[in-house]
Length: 284
Image (cartoon, rainbow, N blue to C red; front, side, top):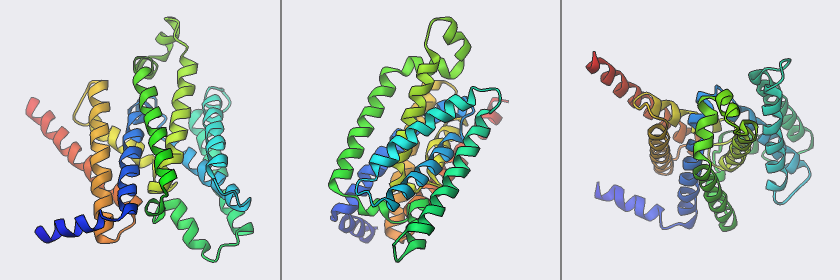
C-alpha cells in the first residue's frame, strides 16, 4: 500500500497529471449539473448529438489549420444546440429526430473532411483521440486549464442563480408558462450550457463518450434519491468521484482516460441500482 501511494505521489509531481485531474473534476462537476434536467425532459440524447456536432466542427478547424479550434467548435456547437431545441418544437420534426439528423450528419461530415483534407501522418490516431479522448486530457496547456476553470465557474454560477427557474421548467413547462415564466428562454439557456460543457468535455472523454458523463450520474442518483435537489447534489458528488477514480486508474494502469472514467460511471450506476433495489425491498 505504501508503494502504491509513492507511485501516485510521483505521478502527481508532473504538471500535466495535475492539470488533467483539475480539468477532469471540473468537467465532471459541470456535466452532472444539468444531467437530471435532461433525463427528466427526455432529452438524454442531446449530449450525444451535440458531441458529434463538436467533432464535425473540430474537423473543420483541422482542415482550416485554425490554431485555437475553440473559435470554431464553440459557436457551431451552441448554434446546433439552438437548432435542435427549435427543431424539437416543430411538429414536423420531433426532438429525437432533430438530434439524430444533426448528430449523424455532423459525424459523417467531420470524418469525411478529415479523410479528404487532413495532412496528419497519424490520421487513425487523431480520430481515435478525438472520439475517445485517449491522450488529449494529458496534453493540456496552462491556458486551456485556466479557460476550463473560468467556464466551469460561469456554468456553476449560472446554474445556481437560475436554479428555481430551471427546476420549474424541468417539471412542468406548461405551468411555468402560465405563471409568466419565459420557459423558452430557459430551455435555450439549458441548451447553450450543455453545448459549452460538451465542448469542454471533448478533451476528457472524447466526442463519443460525452453523454455518459451527463447521463450516468443523474440516472444513478435517481435510483436511490427522490427530491430534485438531493438528486442533483448526489449526482455532482458521484460524477466527481467517478472521474477522479477513473483518471487515477487510467494513469496507473495505462488505460484510455475517457473509457476508464465511463467504466467507473457504469460501475457507480450498478452500485446505486443495487442500493436502490435493497431500499425498495426493505420498505416492503
